[in-house]
Length: 132
Image (tube, rainbow, N blue to C red; front, side):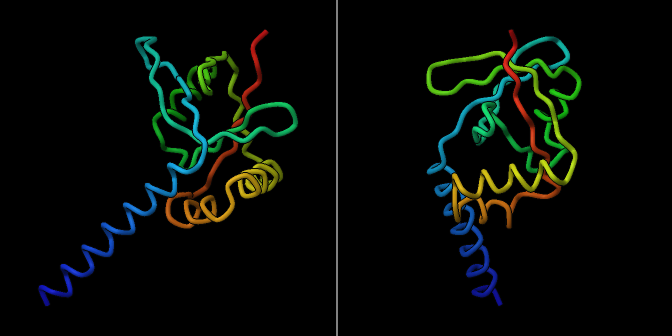
């Protein structure tokens, strides 16, 4: 019984390491949101460009960075060495979810599918509109 428990624990650890490694293959950016004190907090995210704007998805709506941007939608996105100000607009409709999911799938292939299977639940697409 102990061997079985160790084998399961080892398989889960390997699965977690593999999932992390695959996630690192996808180009990432950092979304900066403000906490209640006004301090910027950075969170690594995947970004897809669609129809002229960068889009994100929050895998689970209870994530803290998503809660912060709902309070203050003014965010900054760091891609490469550039950090740009945006207004974050969550899209709760099914049509936006389908379109943005397809864009992420096209960009990231099987890695996006795998992360969706393991980590995504009620994902919400978020459009970033540049501040002028």
